[in-house]
Length: 296
Image 1: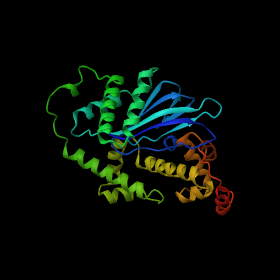
Image 2: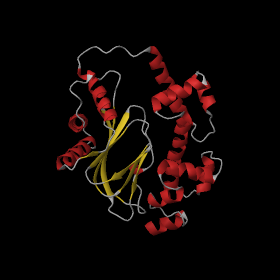
Image 3: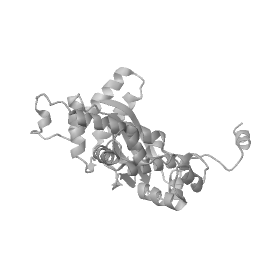
Image 4: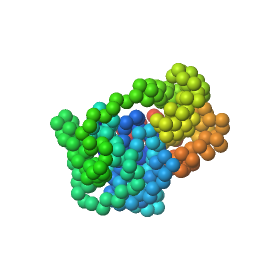
């Protein structure tokens, strides 16, 4: 396991400020994230599922799953820990066990436990300490926490000390092709890159490409590229004064109506609602020189 990020987001409030970790986004291959909500009210969107945020609730996110946190503007602000980590599922037995546990425990876990909050705080502090030894300690503590939260079945074949058969050549090839396609999509998110062209670039037929992509990513190539576009659009909505129409054109949507329909399907909010919920406190209305004068 490699711990990539550990943060505590305090009082994420609708209509007041943006929290970068709460935006609509997905993580890379082999990257998992857990969210432990200390308090607050809101909604957690992950893929096609929607969960209510309550105190003591822990939610997991698998690789490539698009997710976001929508705080309820009329209720208590949301405070939570977010721990992002990467697993090596090819050679590390502990990481294989953790990946198996997380894949089989997709349901919400309710943890009204003060000890878990203390442990999340310890992990966050050690990770952000700047000390390499403490970062390693944070990773080991997180492993311990995960094994207590998601106990693996005693008869699981993963616990048997047997040499695992090597992964087939075909499966490795498919994984490499999908990984290459994901990188191409990321770079060309603003372009009108068709599925047939992506299949040609990675060197396989379109039908085979769609099948292996869906098997690896759990969605079609078209669905994934649409979610990448929406992820990019959320960043522009909360950090620039660009209009919704301009953002729609920037990411190659047919029109603003089509963009708004896809945006709401992915995030649960219209583009204008999203901008109000995750607005960044920057005054775009006045010229920059006037803002600078006020700050002198």
